[in-house]
Image (cartoon, rainbow, N blue to C red; front, side):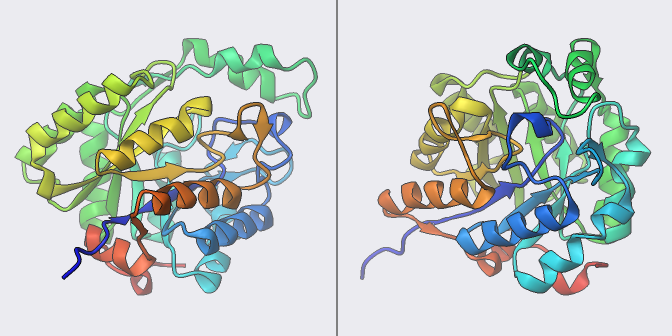
Amino acid sequence: MAKEARKVIITCAVTGGIHTPTMSEGLPVTPSEIAEQAVDAAKAGASILHLHARDPNDGRPSPDPEVFMQFLPIIKQQTDAVVNITTGGGLGMTLEQRLAAALRASPEMCSLNMGSINFGIFPMAAKYKEWKYEWEKPFLLASDDFIFRNTFKDIEYVIRELGEGHGTRFEYECYDVGHLYNLAHFVDRGLVKPPFLIQTIFGILGGIGADPDNVAFMRNTADKLFGRDSYQWSVLAAGRHQMPTLTQALVLGGNVRVGLEDSLYIGPGKLATSNAEQVAKIRTIIESLDLEVASPAEAREMLALKGGDRVAF
């Protein structure tokens, strides 16, 4: 009997809190744009949708639960995809602001950064001479003096409030090898239980670089700490590193994350027109490697999620 092809989870990070409206006409900003692009990404093959919100008036990152609730029900009505709400939010948000939407929506999944890091997006400001909105350039430049805070106390609070309180499971975002050891600390304490999703992140200034040796090292370190059967490994890479790094991850047995939060491009010098375009491209790569894209139902089973009928939107 032929061996079944391995299932690969595609996560799509639809808008994020990093890129600004000036950078791409394809970046969704309003609730209707976010909903439309999320639904299209799910149709293209994404089984998990990682979601931020933006102020509909000027596109700046927003923690407002009311804005989230303008697109979350639409996405649920039109797709079966797993909704994954950020707890990272945007630069300068407090922990309470970052958690507000997730506590309101009680989703199946949330992201959870596994440590405090320098998070530098200020080099992007030099690439643009004119801006759509006044907030964009100062927002980027301020990141040269910004630390994204997630202390051990913060992380435990999120796990208890959302994990224990709402049955939400997490996309554990690891920007460097130390974050894997932070996660191991919570696994050892019994606060994180398998199966869990580790999202290793490459190419952000302040985190580990998008180098093939680093990708393999993060995978090997996770195997050493957790055992390969305990977790699902996923990879995202910033900007131009996106597709080459994800291809390596597929070869090493991983899952993948694409989306306009992570990269605005579909190829060298060519802006992506939508999130669905990136999902379609990585799907082609997955299938060319004789792998199969996991459905939302398969992703839920792989990650032991509570189900879309137990959310609050």
